Length: 268
Image 1 (cartoon, rainbow, N blue to C red):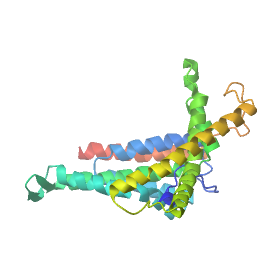
Image 2: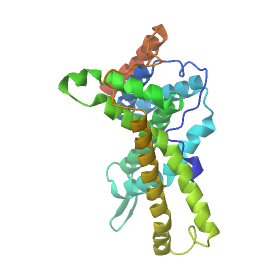
Image 3: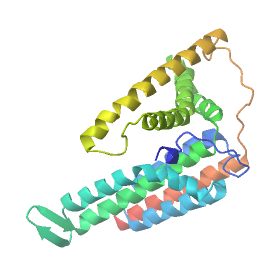
């Protein structure tokens, strides 16, 4: 299961999506989130699905990578959808037993929720898959730069985001190693009752926290040795530059958002 978690990973490529300005990609991701959660009809979800599939095809990232990003949360999605079906009332009643009802409204809400969350994961994963953490940090800092006038620590915030994204794959790999080591010592991680499994998690979490704090301390020491003093007076090796492709992609995204808004107005 841990190997299926791909959050924070970057896959270098030569696709159109890879070459877009990361600032535009962040803005387009935000517009995409508004798009999928604004739609209130199947047509709106279909528009969002068309946009998602088009972006995935243009990225050149293998479909199995997006499937891996969805697999870890599927059990939670299915459980939530099942509870929505049982406890959301409205519309046609298909089944009724005591306090439990299965209605058309509950089924619709569950289907909409699953599709929206899947598209949200694919869209956000596409951002990190096609943008390196360093470039993403520069883009966040550039977008939030107006807040510097209000003495907001923009550079520090962007740096924390970059470090967090960078350490997610590292911590996942470390967790996998700890689990393998504990199993080699006879620990029953995947067997036994639920209570025993929860107790066995302690043998994983304690070494993981110790390893995380040790890595954080080593990183802080390394930054101090290199005389790191924040974003004041710093220069960048790669300057962010926008091109006509970025504006075309942004206009393409806004067009899909307007389509969703128009459909909502027609069917409201």
